[in-house]
Image (cartoon, rainbow, N blue to C red; front, top):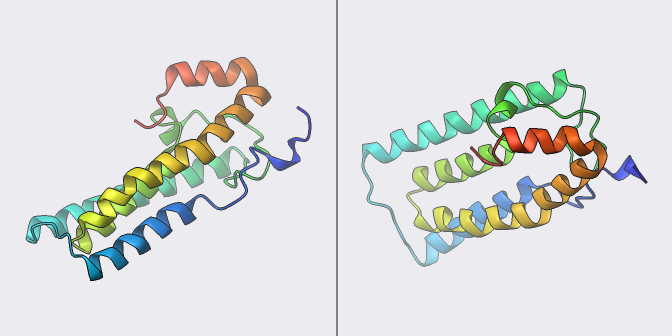
Length: 155
């Protein structure tokens, strides 16, 4: 592959999109409240969302480390990781960011954060995942195409 040193060519850390969405949602919540009905179930939902986010992120990071490939989309990928959490989702790290966003929405009682997860995820799909998939498709060809046929993008 020509100039593989840049990986998928993503120019920024993808978590920034979700961080900005949570911060913007928090600011909107402060000035134009759009609250979720507060009760104890909301705290349980927040805890569950955070727990799922942590499990997905840690499992994905361990899988990438075991395969000796980079988590950073601006660095080259050395292997297709298709075991562990990657056997169920091609994008478990981004899925963990979504779960984290929902955890923040529930814990801060904010529909704004929840709503902003939609454009944040669209941006990730458009600006990051599309580039990663194109890069992996070129670099790993049939191996990656078989993986895509076997495993869904999200869940």
